[in-house]
Image (cartoon, rainbow, N blue to C red; front, side, top):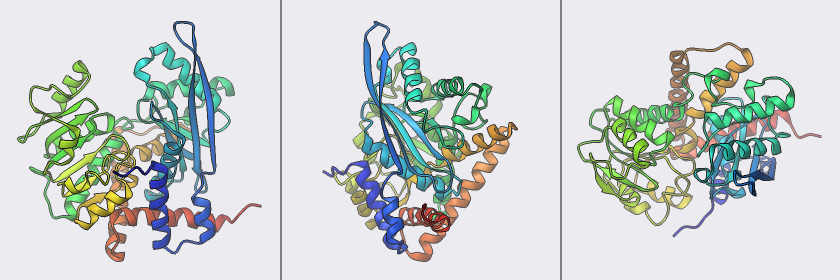
Length: 415
């Protein structure tokens, strides 16, 4: 089985793109290293009175095109290499949809489900205090990611604002609308995935009605994508989470599944579907597979068993480089993560712009602008892939790397 870690995978995809576009070796060397990586200790007084010290990270990969942008995740498997990889992917994600950000990522090694709400707040505020020198509306704008939400962003915004001495809504995105959040931010990543699925179906000459879809990872992104695709007419045949999955050939009702998950804590056991494992879900014969959980779920060990015609990557880095090559040899159409799940960072950009202007848009305006960017970016990448004979991932990464490299060339090297 493939054991490549996310950072090695990110470097391999970069190196491939660099070769495709004959990237200047000096710029290639710059882009292979994060601009800065910060590791912090996060001591927290627990409700018991004991002190627990968590480890946290914040990484800036590249800030040539604008402030660093990237989420913060709370997960037991957070590591520096994972954070570096996610920061690099954020650089390409922002560049491929052509918004003026560089890439960042952050995380804390913790299982937030084991913390009380008060412990979670204290940990968040202490982590925010430790990364305070790096963040700011002109420097680095965090956002939610795995196991973080708008409440966590509100605590970070408040911690930053209390240190600065006045309210700074633009220091984070994905926060509540009552303190400067944007309409349409909550489901933006899912909505972007939906637009990419619809665009991919068009290129393959497929209509929406009765298209079968499996969603691996029924969290914030996966559940929203399933619901939106269902509303468009797709048949959601299977969904799963870390506890297991459910399958119904005739289709599942994502809203009913969400109700069950809120009550049971998992999709497993839903009365309207048969039990299925995550591994079995990945191998179903469906039109579209949406991996929407964590990295590396499609790898050398299971790539040959995947029977989907189209894969739209809702998660970051779900496909390893070797698996990517294996799938492309079988003509599986893959919409890569840096394009497929860029809806979240796109609406984060909209939120940041609204905060800076103190002028806010309606939900319809946000969704219209998001659709325009997501569909336009798909056409940019698809057109390049057709012209050059590249895969969608090669085209997306090459386009993004070229845009960052052009900014590097124009700015020059200081001093």
